[in-house]
Image 1 (tube, rainbow, N blue to C red):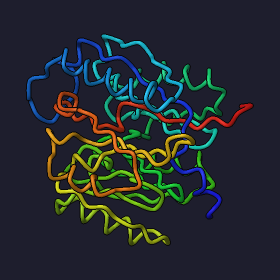
Image 2: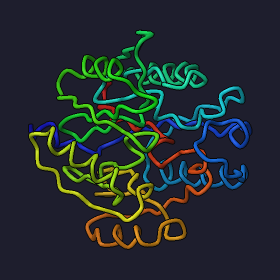
Image 3: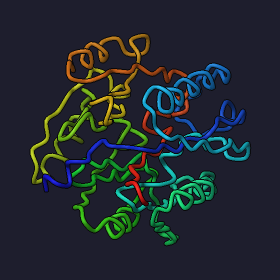
Length: 282
């Protein structure tokens, strides 16, 4: 199993997508805060700039699609692990066409494409937490048991456990991976209950990094050849107490990334990219 962990966090490519103007008024959301579209676009541009220029990933940027107001949240359209890409079937019907452009981009990268065609299945990538050893899949308003079963079939090398998600949109609205064997988790009661279930289901003992704000627990970990351990996380303007926790990670290069507008439509940092590790020669 150690071999499976060796490449954890190593990425060469990222797929992102532009923000349509329809995001501000028409995207799905659980609260009705007003979105500043130009600020959302500036924040997204800064996010893409870090991936492409600062971190040196090869970024595939798909165009925004006005008829798909949520299309910037590419994570929900695919789950990529190794050289296999599972094209999901998003839980919200209005988002199902988002997978078409994603499938084309992943095909162009020569990944093995598996499509979720079962009409009884739903799966959002935001409900999928890959730890390097196993998958946890949140059963939420957007993801069901059949979706989790198809994911397990697509990635047979790994155990897949399901976790109920009661009070948030996605599993990764509460947690994310902060490194090999390290789960970043919010401090709320639902988040801590979720972590307890995950720990009970796993044969592995994960370390945890608890942050005061659940939304701040969504961060992006990478381990890059010339950068070492990297963490993209929330800004001090958004979540000052949580940033104090991240600042203690002395071995990491820390990149605060503002996400104040997309969070109003339930978007987190991991939502806005699909990260891929392409072996040379693939």
